[in-house]
Image (cartoon, rainbow, N blue to C red; front, side, top):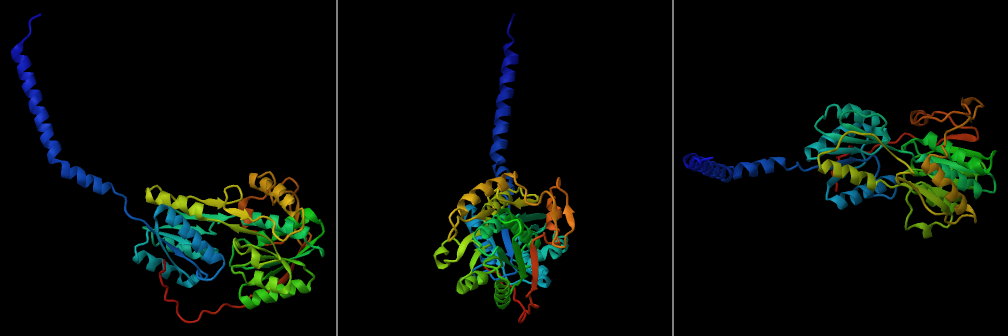
Length: 385
């Protein structure tokens, strides 16, 4: 076989020209590549929170706000908030946060659920997380919590520490799922005493909460379960010398309350951290999430100033609830008017639990102490960090 050197030399020259041409293109396109890299840089995200309560006073709102900061600091997410927002001012707050550069909004009260959905439809450029919201849309991610799991254990602990077999419950309608939470506490109570009574009163303001506690004590309740947005009920029970259980994270304050048996609470920073990371990587999608014992959102403290044996039965009950081995709303449930609501083989769905408007047998409703809340002056909707 004879080699054709002319063809070989021609091919080599062509290859050299191709390499040179490609090299020139590569060098000349460096600015183009750089611009492509810049185009691929993800836009900055900023998250705005809307609170109904006061973020500066100890309670539900301040703890929610602290959890925001913990999550934000761990992943360098820029966040801000507006507190003292009424339902009628919700859309104005969204507009103000949007104008301040917020790309994502967290609605932090179930009272905002309806206005959130209507407002979100007008701001399709924003993403929303709706606390206490069960229905989502393309840009609304519903987030809720089974706080009643904590109340179930609280009801059991309260009954175990009660001599009167009468438990009081102060519920604030501004918190989520008050009726299911009352019912869960009553069912937990009935684990210890099948025929014990749980007396329920509604209250929000400071004076209302004190009146509710007084009413519950006048009915013979010797343990009070507090399900309120501030620590007024806890302070008043301590002042009156009444044993109580709190729904707030009282970490570091245990020594202030010699009458506190335990507390149950929700810890949301892990949830928000996960959401922030999805936002920063541009992978966030509207998707429902439920905080439970199982995923660490719902928590309980150890038994504190409680009777010996309280911790033991708490330790036996919590893992069963967390794993789903002990569904709270299952089996035959009879309401406090004697009507059978579920059959022995039934397990209530989440939607059925959320929409409960009846109390289980053993609950005595003593009334609402809530008065119309007045708003003094126009809220300037100040953005804070």
